[in-house]
Image (tube, rainbow, N blue to C red; front, side):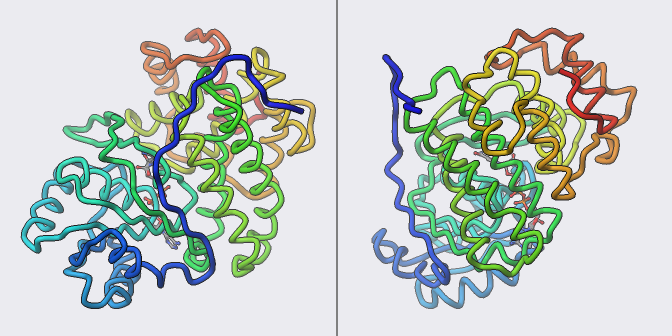
Length: 357
Ligand code: NAD
């Protein structure tokens, strides 16, 4: 089926992407290629060893490590990191990790314009976007800015091998959500649609294999390929109800990022399938059920994903408040959104039931 549209706009960021087993060892070549000599390596505390290894790999071109990246990019941590980058006179950033570490690199780049090399270790896809979410005084805000877009991405399948099975599945569903919502985005273009379909197919054909054998490098490579494609879709087009619900649940109720995406995805897609059945046809085809929402529900369940918001710490009495927040300032969505509908959707997601719509 052709993805031709009679009218569209498309924009592509000038990002250099290299992909392959062992690719993390090419970082010093990329630092030099950027004309830089003083790289600051970033990670979360849990991945400090990976950051140290990376600094050793980079050798004389590395000036230090900063290992305090935190989920949701608190501005207080960014300010410490910017002070550290200035103190060591860094001229580029090397982020080794998932969305939290990439987020810190982006937040530093916003304030310093330092170039970024990202070496992703999850499927979140932040490395492929010019979007930054930051938290200050308990509030998460999102901005887009050209300085935030990483210049270089090095994808190394060996680095996702250590992702535990649970995070592998939830992080993959997080990536797939970018593609699924990209299919019906108002500002989609033929290339974003092609990327979304190929990204979903990459996960559909490899995620079972990765869960069965986390060390299967060929399958890991395919999932990372899917993450790149899905992240690129996120960087190109606007997201809708699914992302609004996840931002609400993460931002206002502190639910964990990837797990929340995993639970909500089938429900949001089932809700929107009524208005975007044709756009979501690839989801139905790839995941083997005429209903795209049910197809994703079955896929997530088979892979052992968390299925219920109550298991993520969401309180039943907060569901009404969540529905209110999510519908107060809604993102554009193909299906009209009412508070009652969202309350019904969230109730099913809270219990872990199949999609209500
Ligand atoms: P994360 O980066 O917080 O990683 C989760 C945990 O897993 C961390 O403790 C991390 O150290 C660990 N980890 C990461 N990779 C590992 C590996 N290979 N082996 C073992 N442990 C590993 O989580 P995430 O889901 O990648 O990112 C979530 C954050 O990214 C959120 O703040 C979200 O808002 C943001 N995000 C932003 C964008 C964007 O475009 N701005 C896109 C997606 C996600």
